[in-house]
Figure 1 (cartoon, one colour):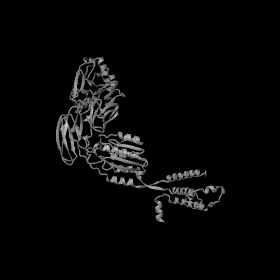
Figure 2 (cartoon, helix red, strand yellow):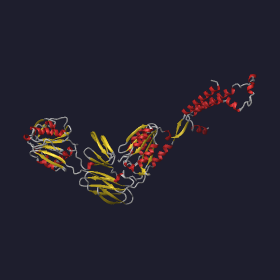
Figure 3 (cartoon, rainbow, N blue to C red):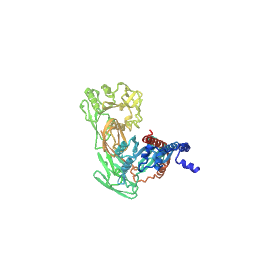
Figure 4 (tube, helix red, strand yellow):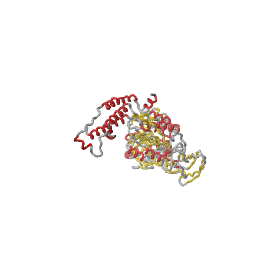
Length: 606
């Protein structure tokens, strides 16, 4: 009996439901107890029953036809009894999944050679085969990106075909964690990657998070041995640049480096890095490794530097302030031009004008109007405080009103987190103008009396107010005095150092309004411009070079062990779970009932 019970338990969830089969007893009794039909001979029908080939004996066919209804009823009772017992079949968990979540690795290492193509090409081909009725697509890059949530098959295929690899680092582990938010009901998560992720040692934690959410996780690896020698770091400076070339092979490699019209061969030991120093070319240039290998994108480094650019600064003065003049003359790539009132041009070609040490009686009223137009055209104006300055009408320029001259000693407080005032201590001033506060002033330093150093936007341009009168302050002898003026000039011309013109891929630039930037693959328009490709980006004022520069991402031949993940993945997918098929039995009972009705109709009983 125990063996029979175990056998029944292999097919039915509710074995007590089989007691419904007892309904067969009264059914069979009723069938057996029904009156047996008696044969009577009717003379009028003798002609028909004596026709050739017919007999009035009980043949097999006649018996079968007579008992068809019996079989219909018997089958219905059996089906309904089995349905009450909740029949089931054992299926793998994978067969029960109703949703598919595809995680595709699109980081730079996926561009490595793989079986005649690239790893990413193979990933896309496999992903197209895994598209389900409802598919969620997540791309692993510098920031995981949701491409589509439970989209239909056609849309999922279109999304997959449109994907391309990025020239960035990224965290596959972050993409797995993100996927846990999109696991709903029975879901299967398919991860297609080379599993090179320097941020983690194992994906076990992220996989456990997904399985805890009810998902089946399958890792499909495209990792394999690839030889590579690549540029893994770069420092660009005006005085000279340095690049680090790494050989990932076990044996010594000789490579040829090209920069401009120069060519140099270097030898790198196995698993070692070699430093290469070179003169920084002006403008845009490319450092490249001549020899090809299995990972080409780190064979190039794009370099952006200044092309002998200078910033033109005009100084309007009758008596050039010694310390301001000296500080301005020390700033690299600044060309100073002096204008002596009243001989001041109506139009200026300079990027910045400085109004300092002027004689108010010699400054013509039209000059101040010309300066206001200069700023409104998008240029920059610096106004340095001096005792007689407010004898001129400059309040419309600085955007605030003069109150008085404070001749008492006052300590100066500055903004701590501003790049202009960082590490700078202005100390004490022994005389300064007291000005009213205004909402549009960006204050950088102030006293108890009000703003001392600030800037304001005037339509398309800027006005910078330097309210410290050097003759009444010790700041002019401070080590940071020339540094502060250098920062002012660089800030106002949106100056960027050579190092700032060369960045790693994966960074984004945010602007207050939409801009158009030419990227290596075409125009990018928006307020946020991501740098996801290696190459040059032509911003409105500068060309930015973006490079991968990642020793971890370039290690495309590194073996990644997924043995533990794979074994558990296989166990979870092949694990048998019961799937109830009661609804299928009820549907079968309905079909039998309908066929019975059709039979009765044909026989003439309906």
